[in-house]
Image (cartoon, rainbow, N blue to C red):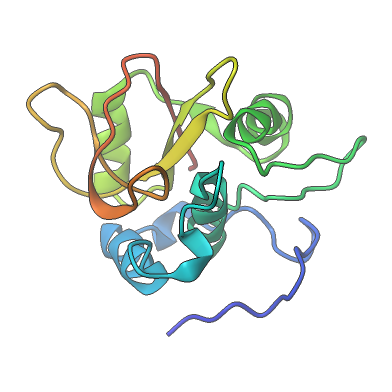
Amino acid sequence: MWSFVYAIEPSMDENPPWTPPDARHPKAILDIVRFLDVENTARYAKRAGWTCCTIFVSDATRLLFAEIPLDPVGPRKWYNRGANQMISWMQQVGFVRHDWRLCQDAAEAQARANHGFPTVVIAREEGSPGHVALVIPGQQNARGFPHVAQAGLVNFSAGYWENPAAQYITHP
C-alpha cells in the first residue's frame, strides 16, 4: 500500500518525475485512483470558490512516478495550484525537462492510459482557473472523450469530462 511521506512538497531531485517504461501497467493507474479515493477524501473536496483538480492530478502523477508538481522550483518559483498555471509549467518545463508530450488526440490518450502510461487531460480557460484530470484505463465514450478520474465541480473515480478544447498529455 502507498502512503505520502512528505509533509511539504519535495524537490524534483528528491522525487524524480520518471520511471522506466517497462514498469508501466494499467492496473497501477486504477490502483492509485482507488487508493486516492477522490470521491471521499477531504483533500479533494470542493472548497468555496475553487476545486482541487490540480491537487488530485499532482498526487496521482507523483504515485505514478511522473509527477506534475504543485510547487516546483526552477529558474522562477512556480505555483501550480490553478490548472492554467499547471498547464503553463507543463508547456515551459514539463515538455522540455521531464519528457511529457502532447498526444495527437483523445484516442491516443485513451490508448496510452490503457497501456499504463500516465496521461492527463488539460484545458486552459481564460477568465477561470482551467481544469486538469487523469485519463484512466477504459473506453472512450460515444462522443470520443476518454475515461477519466477527476476532482472538480463533481469528483469521480471513473467517468467522462467532455471538453472539445481539451488537450491530452502523456509521459513515457
